Image (tube, rainbow over the protein chains, first blue to last red):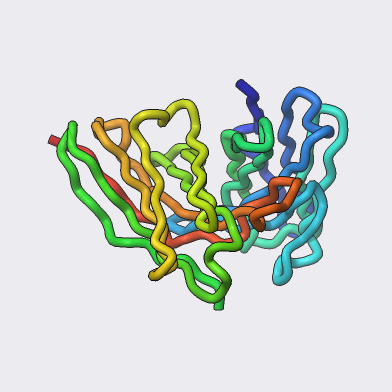
Length: 107
Length: 123
């Protein structure tokens, strides 16, 4: 079965750029979405179709996807961005796969 | 506004079944797939399956085949997820989440999520 791999944790200083990677076999051939989840809350979609932002998501969130790796980038990271981030793709047109999640710490 | 409202927390014994509901509002219910995703305490997200409320077709993750059943009620814009033969490992928060427009050739992301329903399985 298809697998997505994320680093368990990423740290960033306030105002700096954070990058969260998500790797999978030929992931660049698929669409990847990203979700932000804060403690005790439901996930929120922050990036879809590799690089598109839903309305209401700040411009500092961006995404890319090529080769075997998709990347979520947060520019000018703020304390409020501290959360878990999950990547997601489709194994086939009918089967959903999530990455294991990355805890972003802003310190 | 577009929202999904789920039923309340459940406590079940091993071997029992649980049925969680998800009521949609603010959009045309039958036009979008509905998915179910669960999250065990301190763990990641795990996809369980989806349903097309317009036609009733379902797709289940292999891990849950034979134990999960998705159903829908168009009159109340509600989707139901029933999980049987519960074991302690099924203790998790269960989410419904809206997927793609039915008929889209490219499966899309999950843009709206319910508030989650905690299911606790313990003897």
